[in-house]
Every structure is written in structure tokens, then in C-alpha cells.
Image 1: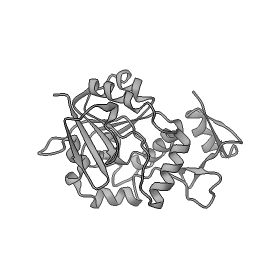
Image 2: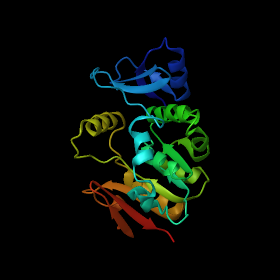
Image 3: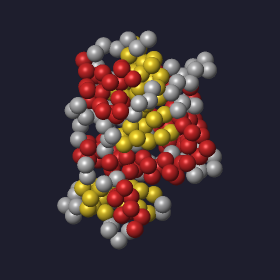
Image 4: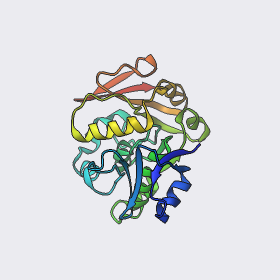
Length: 246
């Protein structure tokens, strides 16, 4: 299934990316993909002064979190069961920009990312390619992070792989007012819409996970699929709901 987006049709590298991800040119699209300085970026065309969104695992905020974010003491690490030498394998079934998956990979987990939106998957692929070539993190990135394009409702069964943990972080309206979150959430919700079918993710996730399913939610959100978790880990803004399958 193709997705329509605006892009510079004279940029050979960009055209190749769009063809690979079945992204078709649309003059009327609200979004534009740009490829500059070996980076793929997503822009909202009616907000030219707003910087584009890229996936960058090497520098910026993601690198800072890898180095100074708290390691295995982070709530997400505790949520997936990363402790006492136990390093679970993870399927991130709602990969998005891959930030949580990267945190887990940087702590030793092998992570399979599943992303159904073609534009977002293209951004992820671009970020992974650059990370794979980085002299500092490239070796373990190649070993621990891999991307699969598809809808998790189907892909969780079709992939034919097992993992200790299935991690879910479906789109949910944020109340935060920071400029960065506001920009990304506005852009993403306009691009992909809300995850109205998010409840459908929990049953196949419970079927695939060998140990637990972890669902990340804003602290004010209801339980996914109306199902009460086995336990929850709460942070200042979010909640990790744990569904044990043992």
C-alpha cells in the first residue's frame, strides 16, 4: 500500500528511498521528505521555520540519554525485567522514532522494531543505517536493532519470532506543553492519526511474549484493551503496565 507525500523528484537518493518504501509523490501533501547531509527529515510544509524530524541514534538527546540517562535504573529497564544479569529479548511493536528501543538496545537487549507507517519506517531505516556505520555504537547496533515494516496486529504472528518481552507504546494524546513534544505529537498525529485500533495489539502481544508484555501509557490513560495489568511502574509522567504471561 503506497503513501503519498511531497518530495524533490530531482534528488536521486530521495527518489530511491521513496520508491523503496512505496511513497508516491503528491503535490498536495501536508508533509515533505527531505534528504540533506546524508539525513532523511520529515517536514510539515505549512511550518517552514520548524526543524524537520529525523531519527538520530548517534548524537543529540538520544546519545545524552544513553550516556547519562540512568542505565538499568531507568523505569523502562525495570519494566522489561533488565536486572541481575537478565537481558531479555524485546519486540517493540510500536517503534515510532525508536527512542525506547534504542535505550533497551544500549543496555544489551536484542530489539526487533515493528513500524507500520511507511514514512516513519523510512526515517527509522535512515537512522539505523547511520548508526550501523558509527565507530562507537555501530557494532552493537547491528547486532541488537533490526527493523520490520508492517502492522503489529498481523506482524507479531507473521514474523515467526519469539521474544521475552513485547513492548507497546501506542499513540495517545499528550497533555504536555513542551515545544518538542508538542511539535512531534502534532506532526505525528496529523501524519498517522491516533491509534484507534491500539486495543487490538494486546492479545497477539500476550500470545507472542515469553515472559511479559509492557505497555507504556501516559499516567492519565486507561488500561489498554480495558485489561488490568499484573503490576505497574509509575514515573512522573508515564506508567508502564506489566502483563505477565508466566
